[in-house]
Figure (cartoon, rainbow, N blue to C red):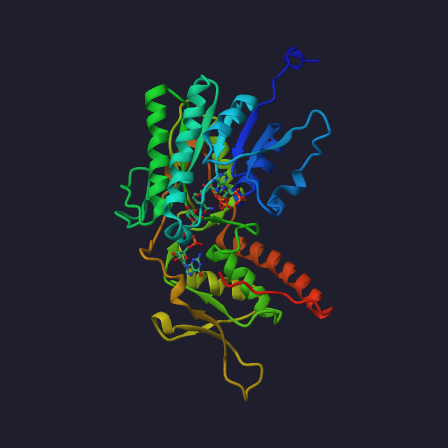
Length: 376
Ligand code: NDP
Ligand code: GDR
């Protein structure tokens, strides 16, 4: 037995806000595999909202759990202070947010409260409790900060120009994190993450909306996919790869901010094409602007091509972010990080999972039960 084997190594404890979301689920899984005790904050909702983390659930009656959920909300300081005091985390990952850019135009004040002031509430809780030197803090910052882009590709040094209430709220979160780092010597850092997706991405973000709808169209469960701006350009990676980076950022000697991206850009139309190809469908495009349509070949030579994609201006945003392309050089050089999943692999994984779930719906339909389509 080596001498070091007898030394008791305390397990690290992490607290994840937004644990029920896409990144929260991947990060919880990742940290548990690393041997962490993981605590998460979930919101009360009238229906179960823990689908993405149900496989990690541990019965509260079992002692020595390494996965514990607490009710809470980023808009409630008292609750955040109490949870942080109780958990005494080594690391806090602040992933909770009203994260839908289009919805932030509908709920701007709430978005500012949760995404902007919510970040301050956690930082201030750490300070009030005197945990500045013990608790490391990760803030989920975003490529949306670049908004109306000032240079391409975007790096840690590129100036910001936010274009939505969401991005403006996240700008506050970004700077208050830096301010607490400088003012109180806290280990606090921002991950400026470009879009990252997965089979558990929320259904109203464009990638998941596309893979889900095309799988359903393929099986005859849905007629048409309605989208907004097909020309928007994004740098899409896989969430599984990006949460590893969130952890790495908290394991350094000094806190720093990092851009996380693939460095490759595709349009929304490219994503539709790639997803359709995975399903064995070839889309041809016709028309321009709101009149543009995507068609597939007719079932027989006597029929017209079938329109399966249409533009619906209701999905246009009052101010759009037209193009985003990240420069992940700093992450590659300082953290030896590189994304593992290619665009094609990402699309394939998402399509396959949505096809499986469409097949389940098809079965349900065959047995006479209705399946509803929500166009969001
Ligand atoms: P999701 O929308 O999938 O998850 C958001 C999480 O935040 C959910 O758990 C949600 O709870 C929770 N939440 C929302 N509002 C509150 C609140 N007021 N109090 C407590 N919890 C709340 O987002 P992602 O997982 O995709 O993103 C994680 C973070 O990273 C977000 O902050 C997002 O803004 C940011 N980000 C995401 C990127 C991406 O491409 N995915 C890129 C850059 C940044 P519930 O399940 O109950 O709704
Ligand atoms: P985004 O992601 O706004 O970049 O924010 P989203 O998938 O919503 O939009 C990407 C681009 O696609 C265009 N688009 C549509 N978007 C949606 N949602 N629905 C549509 O029908 C549609 N048609 C075209 C959009 O206009 C946009 O240009 C995501 C979120 O995860 C944020 O929380 C995160 O900060 C950023 O990524 C980085």
